[in-house]
Image (cartoon, rainbow, N blue to C red; front, side, top):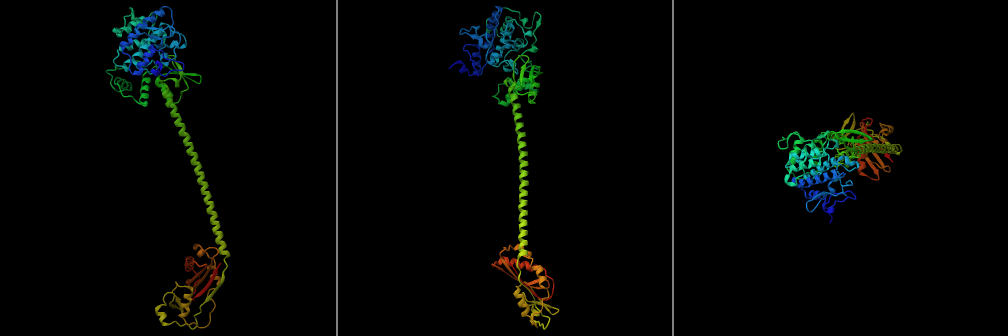
Length: 520
């Protein structure tokens, strides 16, 4: 298994990690979850700074990064010239390059000051110089504050405000851990602040500004203070949401306007990290827009920045969700309209069917009423005016069901509720009728206008091919006796029709009239 495979670092196509280099050492430590101690880091950086200073004094320009630094088995540290003449491919090596070297030209002593500061930072924190980076004492509170002072000067992004004295830098680093390395040649450390006609400006440093309160005494109350306090106590591995919140807090801690977005061919900004994240959240800038860090001179699409890509992805997800919700709402509206249309169409169809059914019913009813043949329609008056004698027993008892219940003006009154034949028999059996049958008191036309319509038994479900024979004995405007016979025989329909006849109102006459009507 090769060193590159053992370390397991994601590499660009064609890139490898050369065994024995400082990059291999850094990746092995990162894989083990430990950073170098300050003493170990100083033991590498101080002799490296001395050797690099000699090369620059000899007129050499270098791409100084961890992959070109070789760590010998005897503890010797030196730069491999063949590796320092080409720009690096690994992203973490590129993070150690001075901004001016990213234009494709090897750097001078000023560029190497930046590279040495970046390598020392990665050694003691296992993190790289980038937007949202933490100060070393945030990662490891045991590190001295003096380390941050020196790194803030070495990591100035603008070379015109960055020191160039590598020996003074080596001397300052050596003082952090004197037992960690050989003593460098004496140098004037004041050159790290001012040399000749320029002054170091740490406001342009890649290292974020120091917090307003010391870490040890800062009281909780602001997101910054909370983040710093939490950083001092190792915590369990946080989930992605917590990690994203922590990254956002680190980015927003740096209030300096340093980010420029290139959109539609125009530069927008510079923005601070807070402003940039707000613009991304509001969808003003998307992951395909180009972001340039004015400090480091890095320029690439937002989606290719490890620090800003997660926020652009979140914003894109929100846009996608919003678009999906809008599409869903449109679909719901369309389906609602479609459902309403279908409902209206269905209602109209049902209405049309009901209308057709009503027309058919009325037509059938009309046809039944109009086309029923009335056979044997007769009306007979039972004449009792002459020689009528009512037995005393009948007058006293009322004649029972269907019998005579009384006499009015000499005319017997029937009880009703019996058959047509029963009413006729009671009327005749209880009376002595003198003379033959007289003419009907009510004419056939008067009865026909009521009985021949057939609507009083329309609810009985009489089939169209059934014959209905009705005999009704009528007295005083009501049927006191009804007999209904159907062909074919159907007692239920007969009873229903009989009830319908009994509920009819006829022209009132005190004498008993009998009508027989047949429907086909």
